[in-house]
Image (cartoon, rainbow, N blue to C red; front, side, top):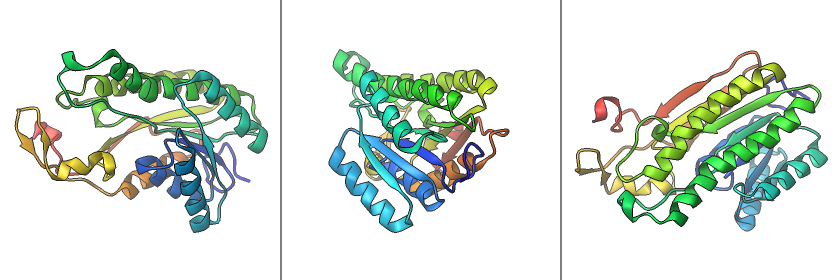
Length: 258
């Protein structure tokens, strides 16, 4: 069993938001590489269906555990279950997230703001905190954490304050995690994704608001490119780390802001 080395076969991986979209694509790719994959999210039925389909396709173990990652008690229970069942965790992919409506900042409710903070930032912190507790004490020691940062970690869209604020904060969390993990063989990196083709980006084909006030269609790319990048990051030995990586649709409005 290859554990704490970065190699996939037999390693234990947890993917948050792993039942749909980018998270599912990442989980499928890891499973295909031989990882034992745990996927988590709030919707148990969605998770169980996804896990069954992935396990059938790869022949690897895929486990579904429902969890609201913004709830510290549920996150602690999630990691306790992983520890009891598998004995360790080699890879955490902090992928889960949500967004608020694209409306002017002053029209956002406190509940909308708080919901995005809980899903995108607090959840990533709570999972990282529990991963540290396990990775520091397991043998072999250490592991890897990969955070989904998004293009919004550096460049906002109009009317996106909650999402952009959390994704900027994820960059700080990534750097702090990478620094604090050094003495314990815990590596942490971030992947910033631009327009992966999912339900969340489906509206881009009909046009989305741009920084200059115009509405324009934007190109997207298949999720498999994101998944392949994560597999590469995860497959490195723990002595090496991709701190940040941007994978984006080549012609999306970002470079030069147009």
